[in-house]
Length: 335
Length: 293
Image 1: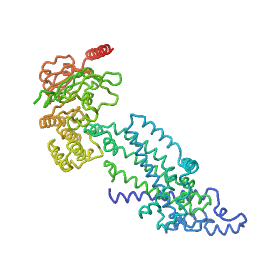
Image 2 (image 1 turned 135 degrees about the horizontal axis):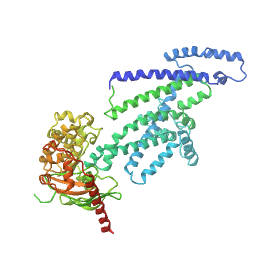
Image 3 (image 1 turned 30 degrees about the horizontal axis):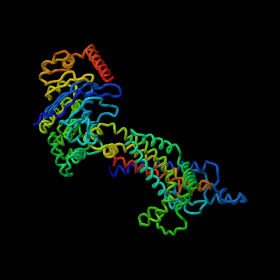
Image 4 (image 1 turned 180 degrees about the horizontal axis):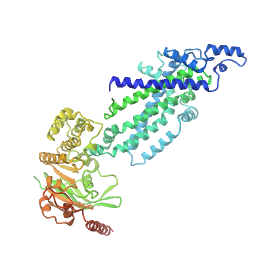
């Protein structure tokens, strides 16, 4: 792996970013809905509206607006939110850590549970355990994350009512966080009571996001493990006298991981996308929730900023996933 | 030295589902000897080896007979006892060396793990031994090869590594399942010689599974001919090559090219003979059904 390879990969992401900017910008301006109309009351005069359109530069042609917008972006100016009257980028970056924490916790749950399910199902592949896990995977997979979110709210918020279903932490709790990464910060600073509270709030939204991905990981990994177990090198491992568990974990698993990493990477990106609705359902203060509010208000600069930040996030994740292949499989050589 | 054979298979019957695969297979193999188990594909040769190692496919069942290893009845042992014999006392050389090594690990790892597991030695000592083993199988620059991954080695090199793994714990018995079939002809000869050298070094018994009579003539002391899961003929190599008693053995010899008769016509095994042998096998199965009824 060379520096020039990394640079080349980074360079290839530029057209993608530009494409996202163009599409989002044009789409937002051709769909119906006027941000100014949403902003001021129905008693506003046409002159008022016209004046505000000029303030936000919305009176110009779309190509003109785009050139101005692109120029501003290059200087780091993402525009001012129309509904919140603040710098759009600052708003998004302020909320991003909450979303990242949610996505990462969901990912950890999905990977840990998916891995465990696949290993258990493969180890006991000749017993009743395997079809039971298979059925569980089918259910987890066929219900989308926002429906899981509603089901979890119903189960743990209403029927058992033992877990919080709204917000990020207990508002009564004294907090003095330096960063927006509340969970990671409290863990690093050893404040485990805070961390526990944050995790209680995170658990349900993270679970809703994790369940479908967990099932995918379990399915794909089980398939690869079974394929690997039929290979000659597994026969050799058995001939060496190793136990079934060791053969599975140490000899089959490393070879079976590659397809799982690929699919996990791709689906992690869907998972981040899924945060929008899940955050909304759990009133979780991340950028997904913010995006929804921005869309309701036709807050063009804010929508654009959230979308670009999302796009950058996706591109960055894809990049990391590609790099991880070489770490797992020595046969993948980059150049 | 005791007179107990290293491997003593007696009246072994094996079925997959209701289909008989091995019919009354008996053979004896002594320490320091190489026995060629010869037959066509699908004849059940590999099943004999896998039955000895207890790595049969899930669907295969041993229905009768016994397998004794140094006088101990393998079939009455627990799975764990048999597993702990594998790699240490009974080992195997696989047919396809390119797929027999785990692509995810360096050669060193794959040689060291089995020695550390069975011999209880430390990492450093195991590495030393792995180096010596690679030396013994005539791999040049063993230190470099230890650091490589299997896909960076040629087929012949891989087979040398697989052989060195099989011999690394100095087992009393080695099942060599077509160890040269997947290799280039020019490499085959070297690998055969190597197996003989290693076998002489450890004084192991080798059950050499092959379809190639030429290979048998080169390396084996005794030969057993298997067809349709039945041992048709067995005995010392010179005797059977000089005067094959069974029609099938003779047919098999006529089907193989020979250096000493370069112009002889190669003949395929006559269909009538196959048909007769298949009938014998079915008739045998019938008597077994009645015997059990």
